[in-house]
Amino acid sequence: MLAAAALIARRHDAHVIGLHTVESLAVYPGVALHVPDIVFTEYGRSQVAQSEDIKEIFETAYQAEEFAHEWRLLHSQSETAAERIVESAHCADIVLMAAADPDADTAAHARLLESVIRDAGRPVLVVPQDFSGDHLGQSIVLGWNGTREAVRAAHDALVLLQAGDCAHILRVNDHSHDAGLKASSGDLAAAFDRHGIETTLVERSWERPGVAA
Image 1: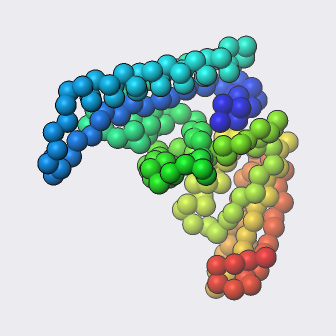
Image 2: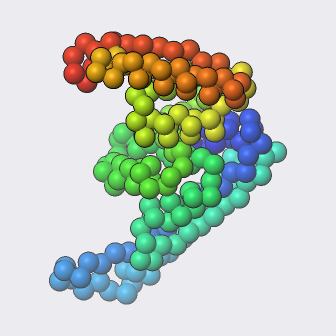
């Protein structure tokens, strides 16, 4: 994820904020269990140590870069980690988050991603764990069906694009709305063109419900 953020920051002379959240140890009232004070103390120490390790990785990765970067550590008390991330995301142009580790228990991370994507109100780019590319965002595929979600995704994508980049606008034929979608996808292409983005309109047909080729 750090490599992906660096690619975007170099291209846009961006300010990168590394954000790490520390959640309090949750003890649910309905569970009849006494938790000794030492458990809370050791949990806190482990969280601080982990935070310092992550900060060092962040600072080391960007120490030779010319773009501005900063580290933020947020503690969540009654809030969840997702809520603290969303608060910070409100003032960001784009949010980068790591995809779930396929070799780990990913249920909690999947819920975190879902919450941030749904509630942040900002574009969220989920970066694969093994990403090692040397470019990002110069050529994108954009699914288009004219819905509110498609509109938001289309205009969010402009954060990543610059004049001369390419956007392939993909529309899957649905004969019940065909005429309207064809017109709106053309309008979208014209809007992107005004930003200097090269566009191609791509159409695919239903093979069966939910699948196009």
